[in-house]
Length: 484
Ligand SMILES: *Cc1c(COP(=O)(O)O)cnc(C)c1O
Image (cartoon, rainbow, N blue to C red; front, side, top):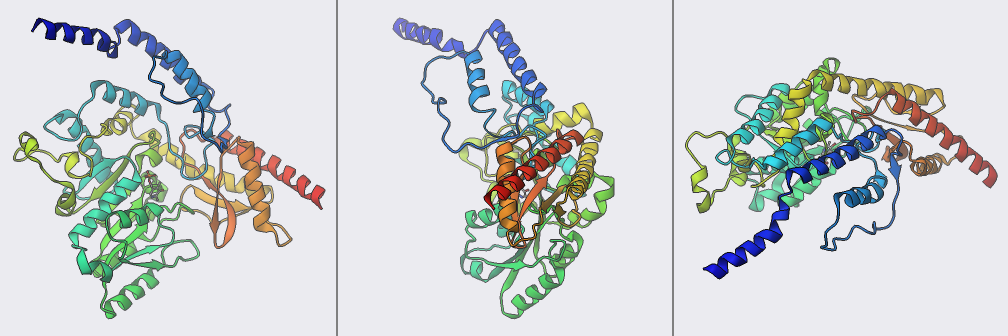
């Protein structure tokens, strides 16, 4: 016994450093605070993009001790300056995320207290906060009280949960797979295709519905294809609409598609990962009419509510369908299931243990109230308009008036080299890096895309982008002249 106690005490001595003293904690905090202040205070001075084409050296784990000071230094050298600066307002490529500071505070509280947000039994408070965020989302999107929801790591997993529920509701398995049809447009996010494969529906029939001149699903064609499929003995199963496509930000005609889904008894899924929260903008509400008709809806608070990466959300009306695959109980969980307990996040998701995500959404809404979020979304729409106007002024062509805050542009050339010219311009813009933009191919044409969704993107960011684009344009024209 004595020997055992001595061994334990010896190990305790070594392991106790895992609990830093109050003095050490305070020192850590000062260093972290300094890091955060420095990071945020200089965010506009730093470049938005630096392309790196090799693995980053010097980040190996060598299993020895290191000081926080050194580690922060390493982070500042190796992580911060490379690639896209995703917390900065100059990130207007792809679909930007956020980096809301009050979410970071919430993460800190969640991590220190380590609340178990998977099961109500473990942390009724944390799970209630998770569930209250879902309640709030139901209100925002006009979903019925009985809707089930979950906060996920992002839109991809949220879509996966929704599609799994659709599959289970319609019992798409065995030889039913090859007869069932999913309707979607070429513009759906690629995570829908990933989800279809992951849930074993690779062999399902996918019907692509073409887009109208505003890049929205052509509903007449949707109807026609469904009818054709029924006539041919196939089984229309699901239609996927986008509330804000990735390429052009277009919101599909949600209500019309909803009616078609209703009339044909289809599962109606809407991916609003990018655009969903624009429903909060008064003058955009109309665009989202019909969103409440969806059987399942995905939104991404780490996009439209400016949270740091790591929070998507899904709402699903059919509780049984969600539970079929996601709820499973084991013997060792027998204490956790009481009669009328609130929904456990773990019963609505493939995850059991999870980060307490609810707090990083709940806390910012509590601290700031909703108003600044709405103002910020409205600001993004106007900034997109402003950007497009400025681009037209300096000789660029722009895509059609966007529904939301994604658009695109290109420089028209007289010769037959327009794509090549714009590709070169894109390369120069990436090399410059002051502002980060991305490219896409729309109607077989190379275009430069803008996606404004960072809460830190301001008018001065757009002015800087225009300055950069003009500089790059001048440089490219010079280079071409020299070559000719
Ligand atoms: C970003 C996005 C997704 C994927 O979401 P993640 O959070 O990146 O997993 C899905 N659909 C749309 C429309 C998106 O914009």
